[in-house]
Image (cartoon, rainbow, N blue to C red; front, side, top):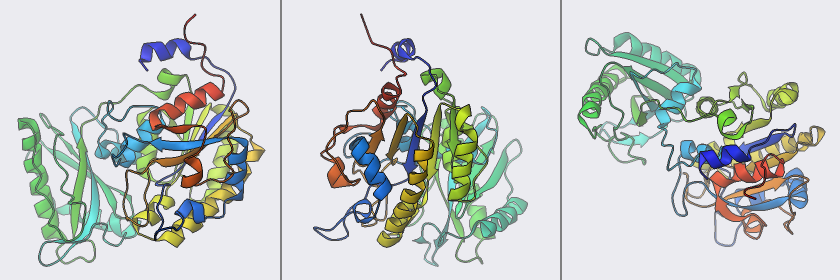
Length: 402
């Protein structure tokens, strides 16, 4: 929908919208005929919301396309990920509260483990603890040397993740990822697609060569893999686009960065699920829209830990039960993409979704799971349209045309 058409339809009221996002929610059976993680989980609260609402399946980008977390979340906020191409580095930098400028190129880094043969043994270095990440980043900052006129900023994100920002005149962000995306391969050489980006790629190459030397005696984190190189070009905010004063409750930096990118107020980092609930209650009257993000569903999927993903879905279900106290006008529960434990990675499979509101048209679905949502009243639709359905159910869209 064209922005000028949407702006004419937006109306404001006191109805609240909550988007509860279980990162990487969608799954697959571990054996033929089995259940997905969501289907295997005991979810009485989600199932009750399903019986009161409507369900369906969402395609974050396009059918068959495997999305990253950035495109998946932008689609949830109603921004077409094919139009708003935001690099992961920008999102990570915003997530650690770094103030980007128009001279910056940002990249997301993963500490990884390289073998003596130079091949990647572990793309996440065993998910090292954050405090070790901080120590290693400090060691690197003290020893890296780049040419005059170029600054670099290296910041811990969480666990094995870090952020690199290069600052200088004439830098470009069109650089390939050095992450080969699977173990047993060598890191890729950074290459720029244009002269400015090639100049930046040479800086990146120098940076990574120095890091490898600095970390050669460390284990398991002895190298970086870089991805999501990008310059900063922010989209219009949720308030400008939808008339929604929005807040984000998220523990992980990247998702805090995604929320900040679209103009949400990012509430202080909660250290527990209980703290997330307390934040939601405390700020409930101040905002129209809440983005509430749970990460571990994705992490356990990437680890191939089916049972752990089932368990965390069950923990989130208990959290969901508390929402009846607030009784939002619209509650949407879904994920940004699928991360099946069977594949140990993001996948192209559509994501189960439920929407509950007094204005929705309930379907006959009685449980929350992929095979049930396949028959739901929302059908299979593009994720970017979910916000429009939510706005409509919150009575925040006027009639189109005479």
